[in-house]
Amino acid sequence: MTEGERHQLWGGRFGAAPADALRALNNSIGTDLRLWPHDIRLSQAWARGLVAAGVYSAVEADTVIAGLARVAARLAAGVAPLPSDEDVHTLIDRLLHEEVGEPASRLHTGRSRNDQVATGARLWVLAALPRLDSALRGLQRALLTHARTLLDAGTVMPAYTHLQRAQPILAAHWMLAHVWPLARDRERLRQAGTRTAVMPLGSGAIAGSAFRIPRDELAAELGFSRPSANSIDATGDRDFIADVLYAAGMVAVHGSRLAEDLIVFGTSEFGFVRFGDAFSTGSSMMPQKRNPDVFEIARGAPGRVVADLQALLMSLKGLPSGYNKDLQDDKRALFDAVDTLELVLPAMTGALAECRFDAERMRRAVSGGLLATDLADYLVDRGVPFRDAHAVVGRLVREAEQRGVELDALPLPVIRDAHPSFGDDVAVAFTIEASLARRTVSGSTGPAAVRKQLAEAELTVG
Image 1: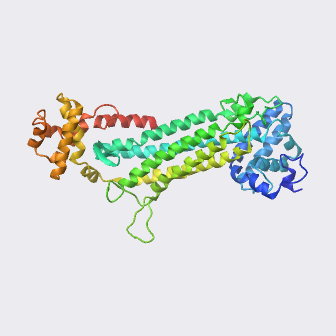
Image 2 (image 1 turned 90 degrees about the horizontal axis):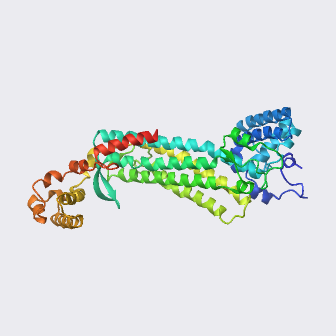
Image 3 (image 1 turned 120 degrees about the vertical axis):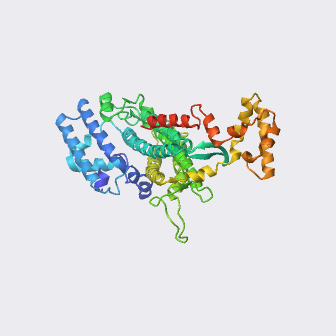
């Protein structure tokens, strides 16, 4: 029997060692090794709990806790697992035996790897969520910086529906439109954190612990809000990972939409934005190219992150109650999604900070046709039902197309002939400035409304 096999956490009822093919399939050390800081921490708390249960004396618990600290130092220094180390728990158990000997054999009293790994995964999530929140806040701050600059400059651009020019807006309004989805993402992550902060430790394999472990004290020590209410549910629950993956999927989707806007606006055909050097790449063949690779990778990220959510949900679907080995894949999905966002978000923030916007090019794209709704609103202000005003302006749009001119280039007599409610002042009302000035309702694109929105966004982002 090898050194590693002597410290396998199961196997007494088996007469043969696990087959190599089983080890290759079953061992999860390559994935869950990164849980070691949390497994060390929860094991130290468990050792203290075993004092209350009468399993350890205070001196023995201190010995185990100190030994776990030394194991942590070895792991931090890069000690390599053995092929026989099935998972992070087996590895730590083996190293702890090397450090303290016999007392290590009692540490697993009253607990199972089922409640152990569920607790470690929750601790990992609780540590990861603040990092994701910080990365999202950094991206929001980059958006707010641009929004403030664009607002102070009064930069105007077209808004798009169906990727067709729709109405004139302040460019700051478009920039802020990407702040609020990220705010919702941060809120979803906070909510996921609340649901994650429930401690499974003490649930055992499925029926709870037969030893009087002070679970409330352990929960408080480990930073959980409370211990779990049901041991069967606790060991099989991965809702918290699904919550995180859904929130991560939405982060990726929102990042992708921002990226797509910037990619499109950065094309020569649009020319609204110029990408910086530090976060762009070139072509191996075409010397003139400046490629927005960061934003393209961000645009592709949802394919991976949303697939992680789908993979987890398909693993959970139809599982019988309690722990099942299908759940071993939960951490692959969790780690992959979080790792992806922790790569993408800082790069997006840096690339966005480098972007420079061409205010003149943006304004030139605001053609007279974008004021069609304002022309209809002019008639509504004079008592014409909007349906009728819509039809009148639609005919003027067709007339402009036939003449090959923009709507605001139609001669005044042609406009006045379209409806008797058009007066001589229509030319004054029919301007970009007038269009923006009319939109004072909160959430609109008028200067005052956008300035108020910016102030609210800055408070929300923090």
